Image (cartoon, rainbow, N blue to C red):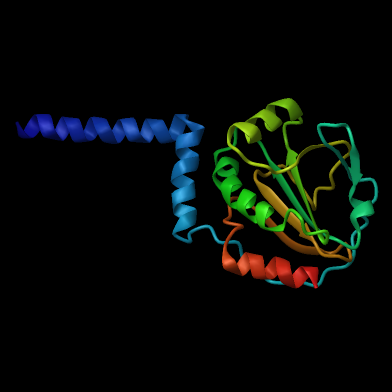
Length: 188
């Protein structure tokens, strides 16, 4: 009897590990749970960096409308690079959606969620299936490496003067109180 119980526990553990390894939503669920307990909190420290030339960095939405980052000067820009297949991206999307819903009508803050695969129809369907309202874009120009070097997810925030205010490569909980306070300070 002891041998059977040990095998059942081992089999369940292996099945759980395989599920986490091979099913992106299962891995995202586990990561989301770790975010909720505070493991992936973004480090928000306001830094003074020189103004960056944002002209020519362009993104398009599903309607084909082009957004040039330079045209958004005077607003705080929340720029997130993600992919549908990326478990850490999937894990942080609910927190970003919560942040987006809190600020979506704020004219001083612009959100750009950039699909790193440039498969806009797939990304829009992915967002809709998960009831996320965030506007999805694809890159229409070269993205400077200091903004996005290919690591997913990557979140970059520019202040109203076009300076880097925040950059995080990896998963983070953007709906936490500290981060919301940080965004509110940038808007002032």
